Image (cartoon, rainbow, N blue to C red; front, side, top):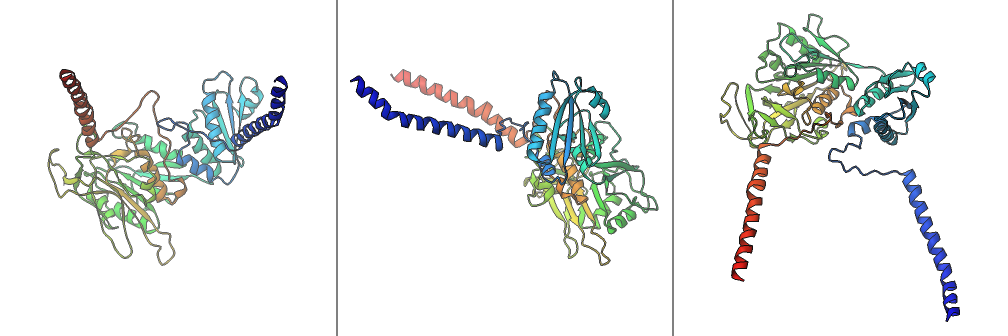
Length: 450
């Protein structure tokens, strides 16, 4: 009996050896595949450990090598975050390499780079260098752009007529945060006090007019028109109170701003005014709106009327909801207008090339300027809308994509429309208690009958 057991074990030995070798081979294959093709599954609601589409678009388009040197200390709490961020960046582009240097153990190298602070990053490419003292995905990608692109672009903000100024840090009236967002995409932001007799400066890549409150001086509108004819790029952000002279510039190009305010009962923010709405009508085929990860938030949006012609065809890429309507400027908050239909609040037009070969100009008109202010810029898709619009106007489509969200530590924001608020009320305050009440009645009756 014992001999039979031994013989049976010997006969099974080859199968056992082969099975063990096969299992080890499968494990080795999995390890090799995992090493060569690393895959991560980001289950966080905000996808905090995934690069934004904007970052991936920049990294995959790199045509030169980039080296990042990180100066840290071993006990620095930021080191794991920096290692993870740079791992994601290098994994997205083979052009990016990075090294971590302990500032305490390599003081000579730190002195060579002129670095004295922990957590500093030095980004280099082709003899160009950019230092970062407060690293994040946005600042790192901005530095990568700075060392790999030939030159900065210049964005002029028209001032002198009550516009939102890029140097004003006031929460309600200033748009200094918008200026910083543009600077991250390698724009040099300047103010243009007045459009003088010499017209728009020759180095202007784009001119932004953000919510003027006063009429332009005689000749300024004509000089902006001439700038468009020369192939310029113009972004008009017009509130309902913006004067008629600047609105006439847009009207002459096929986009007429109406003297009305859009009311959207279903898309207004819950418990808010009817004039503060989520602009949910995004045209997916237009690059600026099709790449937005979230709808923008407009306050007191101004509707636009589009005209089509043989030479000029405007595209309405932002619209309010189908149940919205427009009321006259100055009407009561509960005024009812009509008819109810989607209202265009964002439009763009690219002009044809002229006979003398001048590159075509581009014009974009948005029926709100408040979304660029410091109070509104970080709401949902507002930041991406502004920066993508300016990149489209300057013909740099490679930078048009959804960016990483700007979040304050310990602060979470969410936005609920009026329709969503009503649904939440009926589900949580009515439907759910009714189900439990009905179940309790059913159990009570069943026990009584039993």
